[in-house]
Image (cartoon, rainbow, N blue to C red; front, side):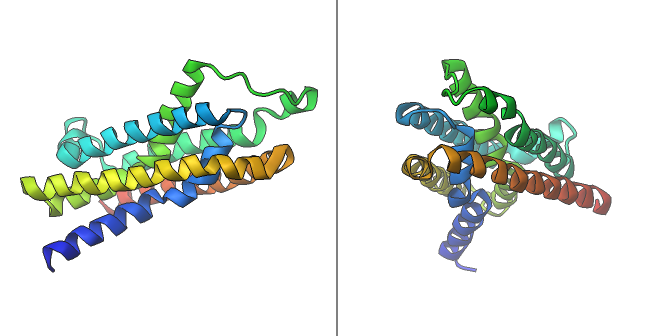
Length: 209
């Protein structure tokens, strides 16, 4: 396979794994109640964190997991359980608050930082799938020049995600209060199913290995 084809395959693999368009509705649900500036801060911070995480795994991912004795299967299970917890909260946590009042969610700097790091950056952007794909691609693109190219590919994917986050704010205005409430619960169910799939894939990997 030609070098350019290898790089193109790496780009497609990471783009599909990260799935920027699929992150847009989840981003809207997680940043509910935030204004445009706050959403931009969350999106930028999450993108930077995810880029750093994936770059680190591109450079020394296999060594990091081996150092702690962690398998990819165990990593997938842990990510799936964390996602399931977030999905549960998206569906049920604020039910009583919405019955009492429709006031905006209190937004603080800590809230912005927390959501950007978890669950947006990890595990939604730089999740088990993206990290696994990065480690596998790093094994193929092993020399210094190829590794730099892989980091460039990661940057392209993360930048695409950030652009999607910026456009998501327009979608939020279109949905309105009722639309956001329905979307949040619907995506919570979808996210729960995704979490179960992560756990199932992790268990399968552990059994196989």
